[in-house]
Image (cartoon, rainbow, N blue to C red; front, side, top):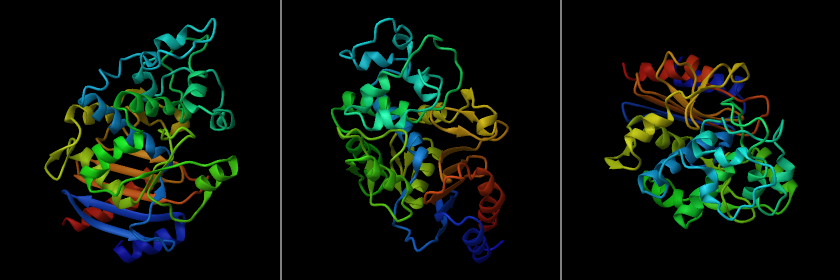
Length: 330
């Protein structure tokens, strides 16, 4: 399949893809756009935001702002009032949050309750814990990640958006993101479901704390830089941005996600699609992906507009884009 054939296939069979990009051996060799998007437009990358949050936690650890992921969550919120009878929350660590093994007192995520509250972090802390204790069970949570953003804000004295701009996006040569807030549920829904290009923004709660589980808007070429940073063990254009040890830690399997998630493994907010391969990925709803294959020295990214039936495009990348990229190096 050549580039034109790939473009036509994506246009006809993967209709919500807006941008694709790829690098091999450190050089961008492929970039394409669809649906009247430009390569500089941004898409809401949904839950792939979590993987960028993971990088920010690592930068904060490198700077000594966080001791380790084994720190207890409540160490960062000494003024939080624990509900009477609640014991489990005292044992929950940052690592539990980042491996999706933190316990929550809900069966499905209460989006309306949290996102209409005046303090998302407190609302999520109220959901953390429960009678079952810490079982190690994989329980995927998007709202729970808000705690990580609040931690970054507390330890750095900066908003997560500003922290990311200074220590991640600026060194990558990526345009700074701006904090974006909404005033009601309808505006929130429009942000998520709109098929139009996004500005360079990061969705935040009413207090300006960035949503760590979703909400970041990037282009496929922006995402490619993130993937290249990871592939190069935390270095970009000769500059160390995050430690190599942290890259290895977050992209190594820690938990099994189970059948619901295609039997993938999970690191620290990064997915490992197949434990027999070295590849890992940031994955967001609607098929937003940063795919990194260290064995082949390849990074592939896909940025998409909202489409609820699409959650994971790793298989598509491996079947169609990766073989095409490999031909470019021959």
